[in-house]
Amino acid sequence: MSFPVQTPETAPEGARGILTTAQKKYGFVPNLLGVMSTAPSLVEGYLTVAKIFESTSFSPTERQVVLLTTSYENECEYCMAVHSTFSEMQKVPSEIVQAIRTGSPIQDLKLEALRRFTSAVVAAQGWASPDDIQAFFNAGYAEQQALEVVLGVGLKTISNYTTHIAKTPLDDAFIAAAWTKEA
Image 1 (tube, rainbow, N blue to C red):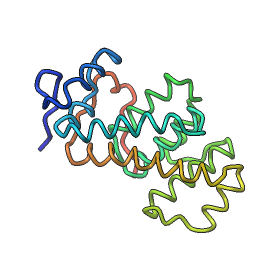
Image 2: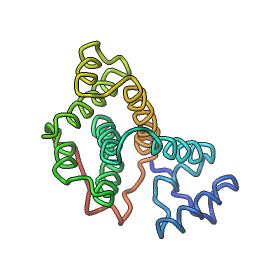
Image 3: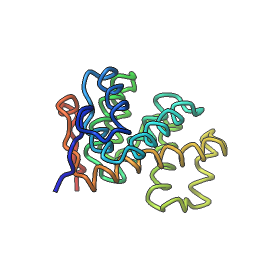
Image 4: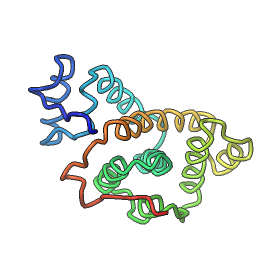
């Protein structure tokens, strides 16, 4: 069973303005936001955390590494397609995106350390080992960035879990970047 994809006309009152803004910004309402709008507090919270994550010390490429890695680990087909598309729009090198999409190492050692740490945080449900944390610091990251990874993982977990529960259909705008985790 999939959940309804709300529109500005069908969404509960508390989400209508959010969907209208999204429609103006993107030219359509992404299905994830439409699904989340069934619970206005969820869509509002998600977009608020997304805005906060954009203000972290991470570069756009680093933010996408965190978001894609979290989606990869959580096997979220919808979010992998969306963030693969957003990564292209933000000029993230395609070899970085492809490495994450295939579960391969990133050639840039610092970004690979970020990918590995994010993966460890997700897989261990926040209980990253002292070795995982030290490897992250050895790559040039600091305590601030470790905690910003937690923020990014939290953000993406909201959308990953929503998509899993609601069976959010992939928007036409993201079909070219469709993804399924290889066994």
